[in-house]
Image (cartoon, rainbow, N blue to C red; front, side):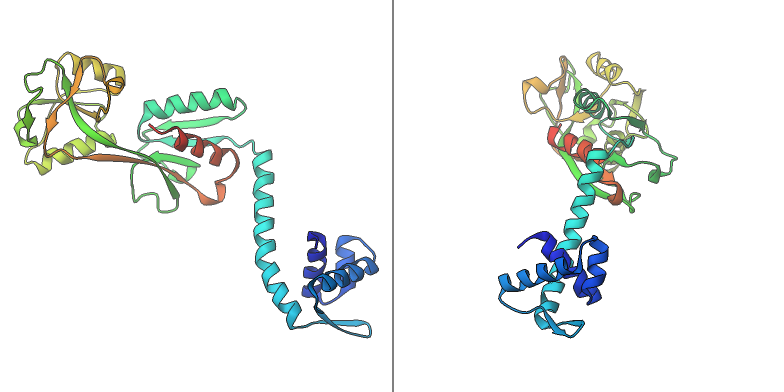
Length: 283
């Protein structure tokens, strides 16, 4: 049994005419007729009832036609996607609204592997038409109702401070930090929203001593005891920032999950390849 045999049958079943099928595939009518006869012999049943100069699809043929309808639809779909993937030269339009440093590192690494891929990248755009982007990197957000999503990674967060901070190595509750200064990376960032919401639930608004949008400056301010910050909980020594430690805050149990949001009809080729690359890298 060959795919071309099934194609001949499927087209003939729709038109109930071998001549129409022969014209579509640019072959003699006899080639279509003999191919379908071989198919019937292999299956052990007739697919058409034949009269002089006319064919009619019988119950066996209708059953096969219904099955082939779904099979050929999937086959045509994957063939189209594979063709697009191999020919895909689209610019990847990317909006990054979380884990900017990590995502930047992944983009530069991806470019070394796929140097012909081009990007158009924006960071932390608040007033924008999200549908201008193929992929949006962000936490859970109801604004992306027109997008599908894939979870990239999730992490436990902690409050961080200088290694010589007087509150180090003490079991604390969040409301005990109400008079402490805090450092924010960006007033509109996801991490800062999580921090502010947690403090508000504990009954206070954090006193902000520094706001900056540069991760290296942020880490320096933490080290020199300018305030308390927020970041990924350190699971091993390799993940720690020199001179910075996690505070032991018993009621701060926040997690941060990052997703890749994408437009379903554009999710193929280099767009899909890039998202799966990020997912496989993890954080």
